[in-house]
Image 1 (spheres, rainbow, N blue to C red):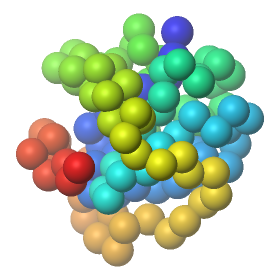
Image 2 (cartoon, rainbow, N blue to C red; image 1 turned 120 degrees about the vertical axis):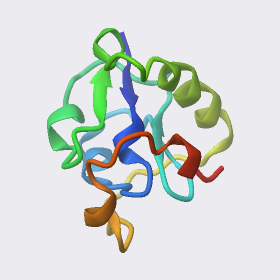
Image 3 (cartoon, helix red, strand yellow; image 1 turned 120 degrees about the horizontal axis):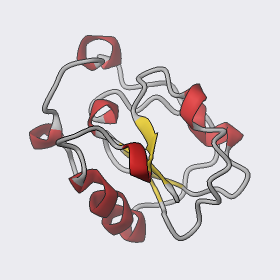
Image 4 (cartoon, rainbow, N blue to C red; image 1 turned 90 degrees about the vertical axis):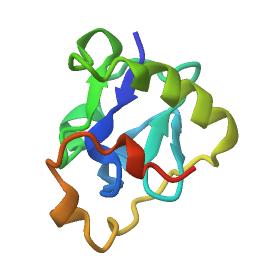
Length: 107
């Protein structure tokens, strides 16, 4: 069961998770990260590294965020792989914890 990046990553984009991934399954967009479900080996290393608590096992995605399973798979096809930590977005702290951020997703 792959892991999924959910709503709280949008406009935060903390990248602590990418450095612990042994298979480089993270992909980077302008203001969001996704996990390629075909590459994820379910190692669980990324989940505790996310300061925004935005990463879940596919079966544990919060209610109302199930659409992020397909969104991760779709965006991973087009976005480049990210393997090294970068600074979060400048206003990440202001966006962390705000609900319903999908309209703010930049593709």
